[in-house]
Length: 128
Image (cartoon, rainbow, N blue to C red; front, side, top):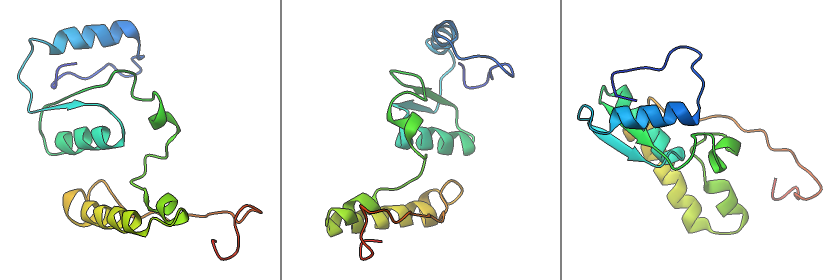
């Protein structure tokens, strides 16, 4: 899809549409940003660039909802699993990076969200 065109409301995603949009993009107008890979980072980079008024083309080997992304919460995360496994240095680095995103890089995209974590028999009170 060219950076200035938009899909029609209700237009379905399909292989034919993807092929048409790729053909329209190749050899089309010059864009400001090309994002390759639409995981959490790529999708965030594409959104941030578009929000700043830049022309963006984003491509991925699969559909946007393919693989990990379709199951993920779309959250900027990473620290809890590192804490659970005792990797305090990685958890700290992750927290620092989230802080940078929230305060400087993308405060318009990233905000704190409350979490409710159930205590199950697999989680001790101390871990909870």
